[in-house]
Image 1 (tube, rainbow, N blue to C red):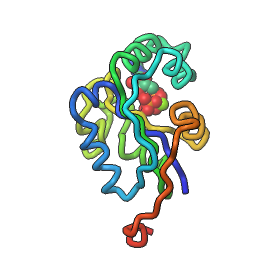
Image 2 (cartoon, rainbow, N blue to C red; image 1 turned 90 degrees about the vertical axis):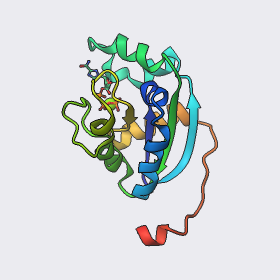
Image 3 (cartoon, rainbow, N blue to C red; image 1 turned 180 degrees about the vertical axis):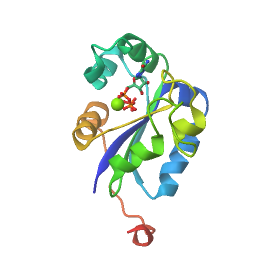
Image 4 (cartoon, helix red, strand yellow; image 1 turned 60 degrees about the horizontal axis):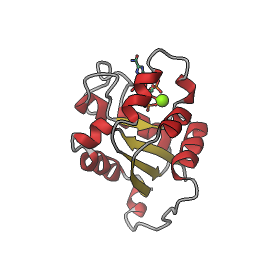
Amino acid sequence: MERTFIMVKPDGVQRNLVGEIVSRFEKKGLKLVYAEMTQVTEQLASEHYAEHKDKPFFKDLVGFITSNPSFAMVWEGENAIAIGRKMMGATNPKDSEPGTIRGDFGLTVGKNVIHGSDSQESAEREIALFAGGKPFVDYEKDEDKWIY
Ligand code: RTP
Ligand code: MG
């Protein structure tokens, strides 16, 4: 089963959106296998966003993501990566569709509430970065037979 790394960014935590976001993923039918309230360090942020290290917004991005705690999660399910990205909506909330998390709760690209892996490769890398060596909970859900 596919796994994706999803993280409520500091603005989402401060704005009390953790429960709403967890609820949306639960209701979609994905399964939570890891969750942790975490203070992202500068080193972890720089590794996580390494693909953007030469972009003009990199310093602000790292500053923002390390400014306050985030809520890191791993969700499991069929096509979890692509579905997570759809649920988040476009990077810039001005382009995110209503009904998506960024579309419903974001206004600016610098504070866009949520992160989600964008490919299989990113998901594996990000899960290892944030949750490597941490305990994952492997469990069955009865409702899965009504989802699959
Ligand atoms: P994320 O990695 O956080 O899930 O976001 P994403 O894939 O939708 O977008 P990405 O291109 O990976 O950009 C990472 C984050 O950098 C910030 N950003 N700021 N000022 C700007 O023009 C700009 N562009 C991107 C956003 O917070 C974006 O989520
Ligand atoms: Mg990205």
